[in-house]
Length: 296
Image (cartoon, rainbow, N blue to C red; front, side, top):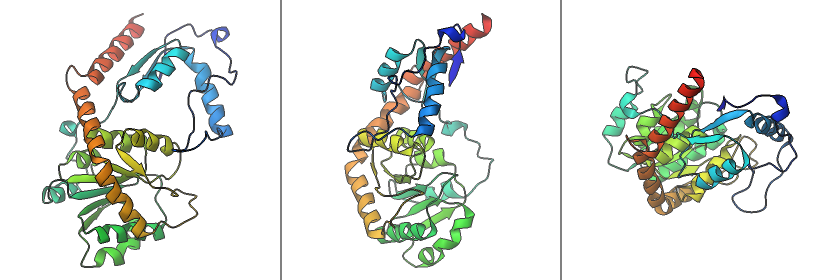
């Protein structure tokens, strides 16, 4: 988010010279990937507008992205405020909204035993891939909660009807409340920024199943913190079918290698959201800045 606060005369805008790129598309391993033309054009507009801004407001935590924040502060003449993670408080959640029975079901499960699966509201893996994921969950013999659009439920019928299935499939769940639930021990999600922030704040290890957009950067963010692993070869343009056995191995690897890192970061982020915590202090900075701008 940008807040206009400085001189917006167009003559003060620093032109794009191609050298001011601090957003980089990198694979988790290997050289930097070329910047797509459409994304480069978008970032050019953002870069030029940044020099009209009095503040840059980030939905992230300064401790989690200290290096990036420091780099941004060197390149823009604006306050950088990290008031995230901006996620709804479970205490403030509206339990009068659609009730899928997910929380009641979680209440019946053992602590840390449930795998939660959610691919967001925009893109879903192909039906044949959904069946492989379902097979993997059955092989693991663990309870699972899957948030999945109703139109895809029919593709799971045969797998979930078998006696070994221990899962619950819902058309909708209160995701933040689900992730904070003590029964959830492992998460499979698509790497959207909302899911990334929520999962890390909850302190739950994750397997990131990329679909599209900026999700690879979010996955890299989690992997570098030791809180997640990324499933290779997925997405809307995937050229292979990830087999159930490979999914099983990946989920087991996440549980054994990422639990400690995820829990550590979860504790840090939750402390930052408390009164007097870093995120609350940053939010107060934002409120003071808004007041100053509105009263000037």
